[in-house]
Length: 529
Image 1 (spheres, rainbow, N blue to C red):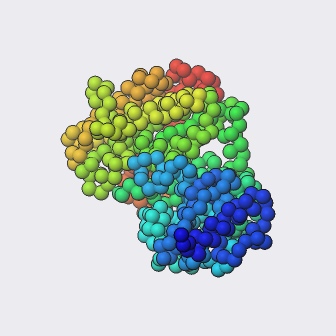
Image 2: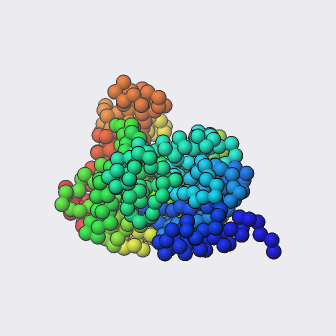
Image 3: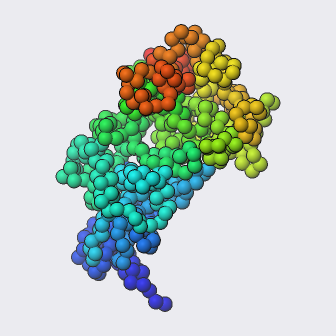
């Protein structure tokens, strides 16, 4: 059987290369001549056994498998730069389908190749964010859409270099604090590294990698980077390595109690440029006694329903730290309602990836034939089962209210509004019903502690008819210029769903009061101020 040159080199070189890496020896001394690509797949520690694929400007593809330390080596003789790299965790190959759980997928772009030499191509959260920036410049929805193209044809090497370097200011001081030599010249793709928790990998160890979601199409969106407190990391909000390491130490410490928040935008932690917008989860930890050793993990995410919060990996990122005796607060319902399939802009994507259906008036689950995961109760029970399997205590809450009257418009008196009906919207609902009641059904069926935050926030809103805009998001753009470009959240166009700081703190206090008043949560209540 005849072999192409690159196939023969791969057969001869790679086994030797990987053995030498494992032995800690230099590859250069014993390698045959050829153009090689080697690097590390790291997620703050090795992504062991990851599948690494490499694509070039002609659409050629080559593959390798990382070893237990996340290292791979691959013959790229004959490939034409730029190269595009994809690493996928073992056991799940889904980087694109938003209706199923996503794999952890990292991409990278390598602008140049040195012929006949070894080239470095690392894959990690920072390389994926750089790829995302290139994808955005080229009008792709996110990095995976560019990766799925399978070729780098038409991608300018200069753009790649610019974007690979563009994220450096956000982590530069952290790299220096981690002891990275010549940190000013660090490149997440081409700087040699190890997945050993030191140097650059110490920085990666405190980063949380998220890929977003495009509402209109349902495809994976752009990459964002957070720290261990689930605060966004960007050039305007640089990473504080020591603070993030201290938070991670508390998260991992068995002497601390973890409280995980599974939720949506009403609980989220927001970027500083969005101040004074806040979610209640952003300030919740402050309500616990300073000596109580409680760590709140708030990975609540804007726009996510109970179903795609799970599928996009937000739950799994937090759940890896769960220990017996921890708590999981399940707070979904706002976005699960997005089930109008006939809605023009995003109806089909919502139904395919986002929506869940409430129980009917008799408490029976509703879902399309063969798709029980689209039952809201079944979706909520996913978290209940997984929390209990880890020895944690699940707590369920109804959603916070919108400032809506009985006409489902801004106004008073505020009434319950987390339901869908046959005559609502454009009539594209396969099933309708009450989401808050489904949460109560779920609590009863699973014997869960229930906190009715909808009722509490309705009472609060109706008691604050004259000053409700001081709590929900209705700010002066002259004071907060970012809101001058937004369609809502201003005094002229209030956001009736989300909160500013005073509202976030008020809701967090209501959650704390609910914990104190709910049977089965006495141990957690004792840790509150």
